[in-house]
Length: 369
Image 1 (cartoon, rainbow, N blue to C red):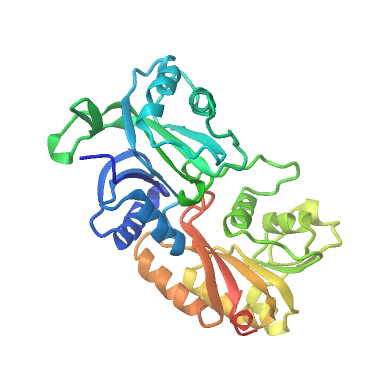
Image 2 (image 1 turned 45 degrees about the vertical axis):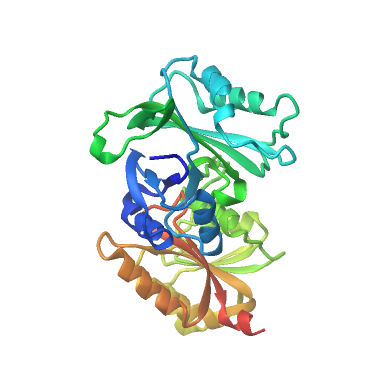
């Protein structure tokens, strides 16, 4: 086995089967070689990384969060000298970086090691950027050097390390798996797709991270002084995020909102269910969000019922909760319901999602305007 078509994919550990379905749909000959950590899959794609990346750039997957090529493999000693070793040994094995494009090194450690990702990043970036190499830019890189340090089944042939096939039954050993790709090819600009946010002062719930991540992943902009509807708002995490970004929010929920929202004149709390608000006759909104815990199909029907109250220039964002069984049929049914009133502009299982996905919706009227 060569490294030409080896790829590392990440997904939620509970969605490996769905991620593998997406992989097989894009590359029918793909095969799982090893599970490096929960939700971290080493696969033989059967096609070059660039071909798989191009396919997913045009048809983004829902459950695969991040991907990287594996173009070089080196065994590690598991000691503090590993970062310096990688800085010496990896660059000659990797494809050359484009000297005109800024780059960054992203490292994930999937084993207990006496150093941090920062140590590998610093050592390797110094080696790659010296002597007329490309500029280092960790904030906005256009090419990525990805490194994963993990236990993997290795074999050596003619002095080159690669992954052993399953029938060889090799005992895993600590190794660095590395590759170079364009940042746009990796599905996520964050190592492993793991987008982390610092906890803000006044934060109400961790659900806020889902909304913040969705803004980034889908590239969503909010209208100045927009009017938003938050369905199932309690305790108010998404309402707080929208208010901090200048939106006036109608929060619909029979439950209490966090006391920190009580004196905010930009929040109107309607103590009723979403169905009751529909019967009352809603206002018009620039955006509608829904993070309600209900069957995905029922939630989709609710969003379709609210579609007439979304302005043509607006958008909607919702989470679809997936059951433990029959997830794909339920998701397909929910999508079919949503398409009666919306275009599904994006759908991803974000890092901050659990047994759910986040869906970005555009009203059909927008498509006709």
